Image (cartoon, rainbow, N blue to C red; front, side):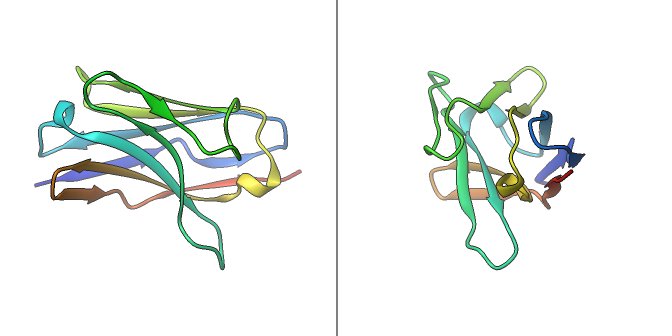
Length: 116
């Protein structure tokens, strides 16, 4: 049974940090590229970070570049998203995504709220 379970979300003040984790099971994690998306109320889902399965190369949109860092630990079947210098506009539900060829798996999401 394929599972992606996100954790680490919560309420943080502007300028603060959070580290999200996504634990994978039920598939060969190391084969899959991993991505983090977010979706704020009334907005479309947005890709915020990606990491390849082979080289570990990463990519970010300008909105989070320099503040967010994605990493993976294939031994633990886990992908992380370190989020620093958080802003109120980072408030959203954050989703973990695994993709390889035609296989495309999603987690249930974790809420991140940035507010004073």
